[in-house]
Amino acid sequence: MVNDRYMSQMALITDMVDASNIKLNAELQEVDARIGTIYAYYKMKYIAGEI
Image 1 (spheres, rainbow, N blue to C red):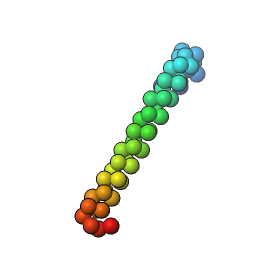
Image 2: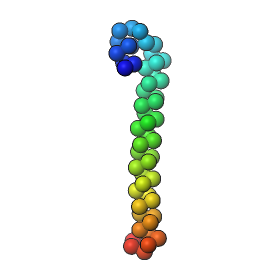
Image 3: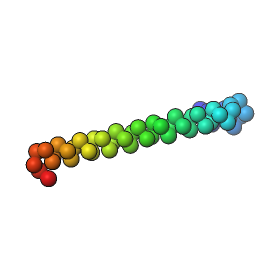
Image 4: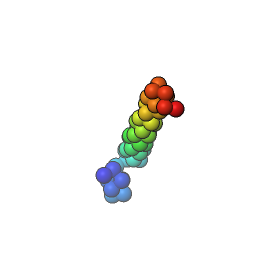
């Protein structure tokens, strides 16, 4: 893990920032996918006349 390497002074702070940005991006993509699923579900219900 990058954090372990950083703590043992074997990684640069830029490695930590890069890893943090990658993690944040993955979390944002997950939330975006969940929102897309919910949007599609309600759009389908609207088109079907259920709401």
